[in-house]
Length: 106
Image 1 (tube, rainbow, N blue to C red):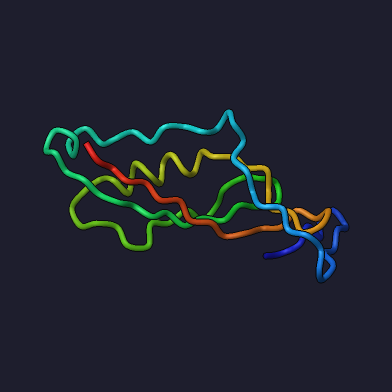
Image 2: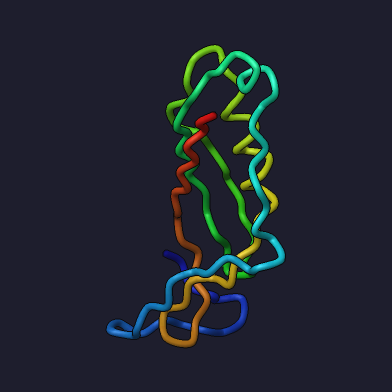
């Protein structure tokens, strides 16, 4: 986690941590890819990303995408649109890494 140094905020060792929280307006459904739905395919996708000090999402990846399916693209597109109230260490907003798991089942 990095501190919100641009705003002059320096986390102090022992400060309480407030976990990130999705901003309600950005809680978007992830669309089941039509070809996979028609074929009855299932899959579990784990996306990894950073929540920045301003609550935006960056560096979205799917470390282990399943071969030959489009589930990862659906997750990447949706997760990149999310916004969060950032993680806080005391009064300081900090960047943190998060994972998000989507279970596509028909």
